[in-house]
Length: 534
Image (cartoon, rainbow, N blue to C red):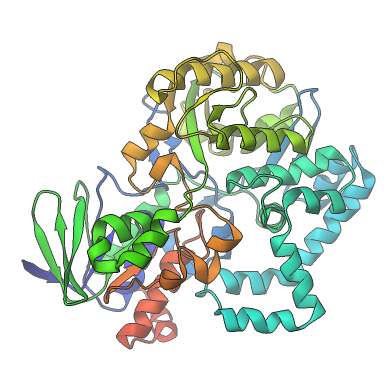
């Protein structure tokens, strides 16, 4: 086996690259191994539909990454990372042509909400002030390993702590009903539950909706100039300038273990690469435990827990190249929003789509997040053209039937096009009246397609595990692996299957690096304070 590297990182998503960069900054010689033909994982941009149409294939917006110190610590602007700040931030469109639009300016947001409820507009201001009061604490929680159960228990010793715990456990329906009076405002917040696979009746949805809403109200719903791929490219440039190496088309088959200590990796082509230092995985934690390590190494108890680890909701994605930007019934603010959540003004609608998907049914009225790529960044499409991505979720991975009673097949290969037809027809009839006529190219990725392209997207999910109260913090993915360390010495987790969870945050990668630094006896604060010279 070759002995060329001090650390191996499995997977070149933004968290894997973030961790690799911090290890390289400490002077380790790092090798990143990526199965796919390009880097980025779920932070990638490709010409999916037609040449010149640059679609973000998974994540499109920078939200919680605004909390991250990584861009400053690694000076990513020097390596090509630049944020755009589209206006408006997002809109919620209703079938009757009304909408609520969230602007970067709080007063304009509240004016939009006030068209539905003056009381809710005042409540939004109070919620935002509460966010400002907690912002520093939230930032610290994201960018450090999760607190222990003892530390969490200590904060429950006061009424304030117990109130916060109640809020963190509260479901969306309960929180929305006690917070807002207009059903439209409730849906404005509740749609964010779909992003993390949380229905109105799941525990923990209220705090997730509040945090999503307020983070974007404060920071905006930002995009990376030139496509999300520019984030991993910037990280890759930093890594390579500090002596690191990235190999694509290099799939890891297993992690080599000797007497309970990882000593290298074996690729699917039989090549073995020795490593005396950390082997860090940004792969799905179930893939790491059951495939890359295996039950013989992690033991039957951990293998059993990882098999029951809940994956979350599957998604289908429809990529659209348009000959012109689509027009929206609700007006120009909605047309210019980087995100549009289209739905009836009803929490019951969201409960229904989750109930159908979890029962194995294709939804009769599916929810499709509209990502307006070209409105957010005109460089993504040829001049005057439009580019959209529709993220249809939740959908069943194993189809048992059709709630609409029209689609007979239960095979995704046969279902994805007629189901995409349903989505397009629904959006055209209720929200975007000329959408169907403006489509010049359409590509549909079913959950099965997504899983085949990205092994970390098990069952076509995009969160590395369901974001549920019993799969967060030190319990993510399971308690035995909740501190970024696996049961095998030298093997670490650095992906979204660790705290603080899914989304583009750079936090799991940075937090894992902190754990590795401690185990190697390195000073994290001292190292990140050094100038970024190789």
